[in-house]
Length: 197
Image (cartoon, rainbow, N blue to C red; front, side, top):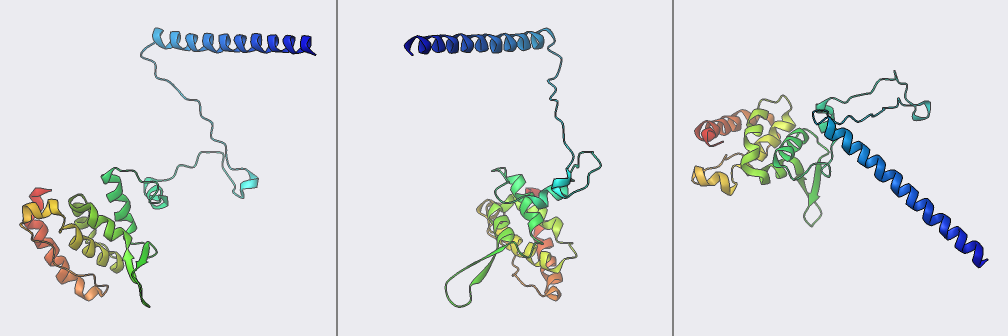
């Protein structure tokens, strides 16, 4: 048994050395090819397999590329990074989503937390130009949240530094009849301070 054990150990060591040598030669060969042709770009050969019958989808065999707008709608809060521009774009898209809410507070009637509007309000100055663009939406719910987010964002310390504390004085109101007057207030504020954005 001892003789067999030594022989097996020797074979394992030799095999490991040969594999290491082979991998090293392959890596050196790839590096040499790259050095000889520095202008060449590395090309990845990626094959996209069509959905099979087990997926329950029929496929033409071509890759299904999702439009950018659909990708954004499929994103979750966990998908977005610390990049503030990405956060603003994500939450602007979520304003019209009536299910993108939470609740808070104790008592029999918890209050609704409108997540997208609150997050845009916390992002402050960066979110205001996008919110102003969204004011012309046809969706009454979305417009109400845009106005609410503008109220919050315009109270950001960075914004108050150049407005002397003047903010967009509107309320969260889902009655569309109140929106034109609030839009006028928001646009008057924007026209006064837009050179700071």
